[in-house]
Length: 576
Image (tube, rainbow, N blue to C red; front, side, top):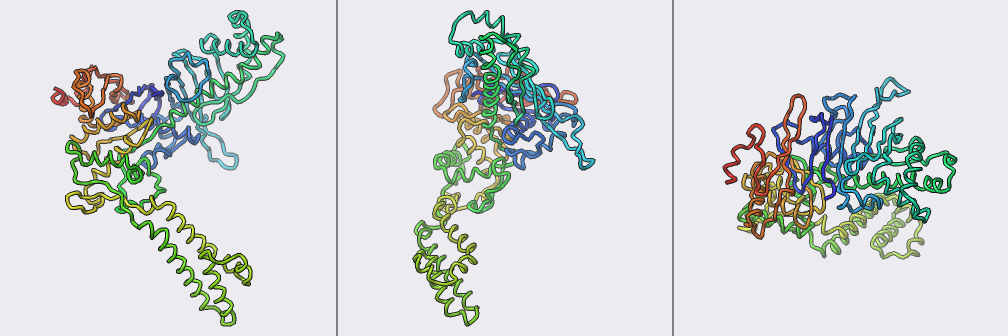
């Protein structure tokens, strides 16, 4: 895992900066309306900004209808548009899959701090009295190993400039040395060069380096000017290579790494979609398809491995204990799709043409009947080029019916090519009687838990944010979800979970697995779980704002400190 934490300030319920550590499984608890969902919503805002560049967002692309931020003036704390919403992200660079500048090999932690705000007073529309809002990146700070390396702030609109670069930062010193050796092929006194030239050079270069905000992270955009600032050959060479391309590579590489990590986010909302009775005809353009979990039914239909794991969960005597099994049935036989249906379609097109011809003027009837025969043969793929050319008016007739012919034949081609998707139905089989039933016949619990299971089983190396996975589940099944998340996070899938929940039973199962790991009682079905794998957070009101408290667990799966206000105090009876 590379994204190790994020922070929020002036966002929804949070005023002062609140840090959210990310472990393989992070659980967020709190009373209703305490603001615990806001942490997930902040990540959705960041994801949307990375993908679209839009910071004044209402409905995020990842959240669909489940997550409506309402725009900047709604999600900024207390609706005070003069505030800046602040987002922070922390990376462990050792786990990144992207290429970063070589100097960052020395880093243990990379941090980005961003401030998002509205242009002062809004922008005046020249054609009316309406003031349009411009929400953009106002400030960016890059820290490496807890020391600030550079800061960037907005100048006008999306144009930004570098405020400060710390020439004493070890990463920048290493960057200087690497580039100096690269361009001069000498190992003469690098420390002397650094002390004599680099600080002064940076002081002159910084005002001439411009940056721009594209999406959520800035980029170095413009080369500096004034080539006569330095005269010595060594420093002229250094300034030609270091400031523009090295700083650009550094900021671009770091920003790109943060963006890649944020793009790993997937979101599942608190109320999952309840698909129509016939899943094969569910809408594919549903804006809530992912956030509502509607896509999960297609995954189960198309992925035999995921379908096996879901079926195992549905039928296991220690889990859902239903008599139902998900199976895939063909709606049409393959030979019908490849032969019988296209043949009938072509005959129908022939009959349609004949019907049209029968209503035409008698003077044209003879020629047009001949033409109809040729058209039918053309549709069947039998007419030669010479035959088509030899009949006057065939091109005009075909052109007049081109839409119908094209649509019909394309439909046939798509049916044949996509038979596994469009012509297969996912059904539940009652194993007691062999009777196929719909998910709408067996209660809403299956429809609510299936997207959660698919998120865990089908995702790999994703950051999975899920709200209330336990909804409509019996307490015993809520506990079983704990094992599902542990397997997905600590097993081969290597997912990271950020879960907003009210379920004590989910946490108790995880605590139990930690205790079994510490005492050596772990069975073959359970994962080893250690304190560094789990983070429990508690969100509570503190005056006009909310705060996030860390609730650490020890190696025995015990809370190191008591729940604030006696939250879940009855759980102690279940632990021992």
